[in-house]
Image 1: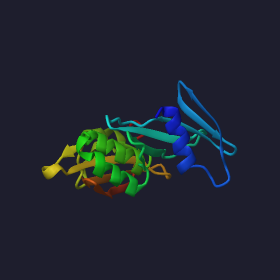
Image 2: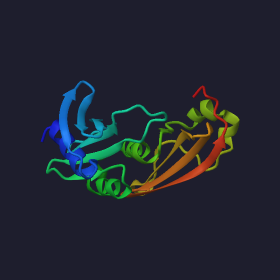
Image 3: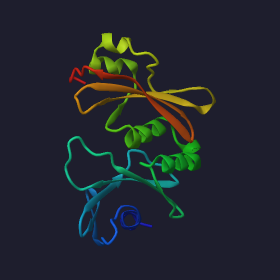
Image 4: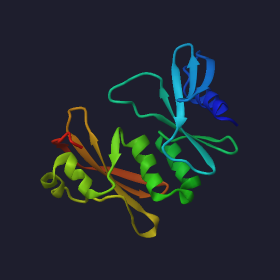
Length: 193
């Protein structure tokens, strides 16, 4: 199935409102644009790729600030579609494809679809530029992207909340499940990060 066919199917089966129908599907340099009577969606490759699944972001083709979390879809070679922005869909994807995914790719998918507009913390010292070294030093359980024993994974993300302050989340992952907890919130944002 081609990317255009995937786009048509994903939008028709998962995003169209009742009574709405697809009017056109066009591929261009920015992805695939799917237009219905009421909406326009743009489908682009997700930030992670695998050999057995095609991963896509689908967003309404409009500007929002802050950007909306994209809809995420995985389509396997048999045409099975899983919704990655849905917890049960991403858990099923991890169950089916998890062992073939790099640990960083797992962290990217979780951050991208379930972290809000968050940033993966590659190195704990990266947080120094976001909230300052004194504030970062006081956050317990802070960890950069690490692989722990028995295939489990732990990492942290940071995000700017609607009030302009920074929150730090820790993710503990044991595929196909995960837990996200906030370590700190309402931290002053240095805005240089």
